[in-house]
Length: 138
Image 1 (cartoon, rainbow, N blue to C red):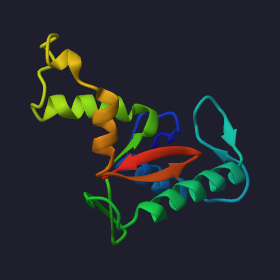
Image 2: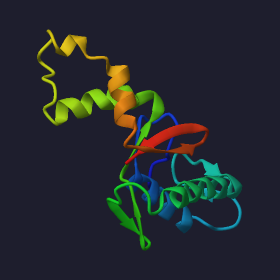
Image 3: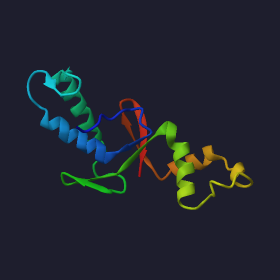
Image 4: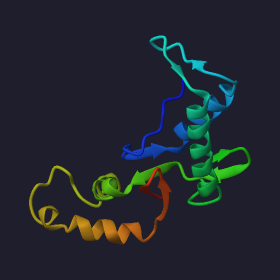
């Protein structure tokens, strides 16, 4: 079963959103749905609300960003970055591209204003809202 998507996730992979949408579409039957997990059933209205919310997110992202993931004839950005995680994301990206050495705990690495670095990086990103939380994508 495709896992649920949470507004508390620091990073959301659009492929997980797509998998969840496809899973929810398969469950579209009247009445309670038995998911087979600890004998619980979820009301169809809750599943439909989740499906609608995720499809709205996909509609908002369709054709935006770098278009790294293709689904149902549209291109989507692969990663969504939670606003509160963007500073940490900027630091990780700087390390990944060799801009800073994570093992170097001395000048100038200890002097980088990561808040400013994140603000400047964010200029190349667009935002979307998911469950009242801002996520950034490129």
